[in-house]
Image 1 (cartoon, helix red, strand yellow):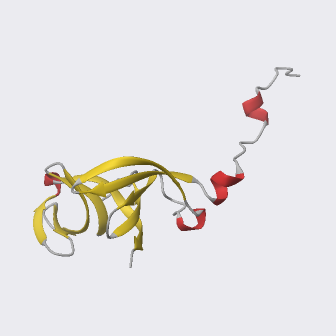
Image 2: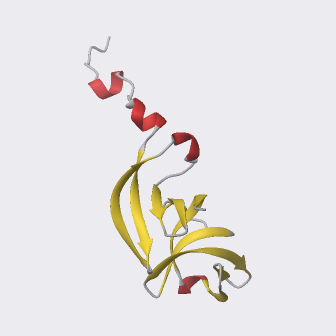
Length: 130
């Protein structure tokens, strides 16, 4: 019979605080004038956070607020947090043949190579301000 003592981590389940399950704290950032700055934490309703999200952050702008999955590796059509020439923005990306994308925002759109932009993360929730 093996009498080796098991460590505490092997015998007890992982416990989470109720606040981490119901209203977890997310990193909060403010995006203004192409720059994104850390602004502490925000408590957010877990029912609004996608369960498949890997590294979710909250991004606040003057027009809308966003939940962004910074761990999203595959670029698909949709809204993304991107950097172009060092300026950060939330833009709509549409993939087109030739490893290119159409980058759109409320006022402009242009076509470029996917390698011309730095993908930061995928927008998984938009909170529109009225």
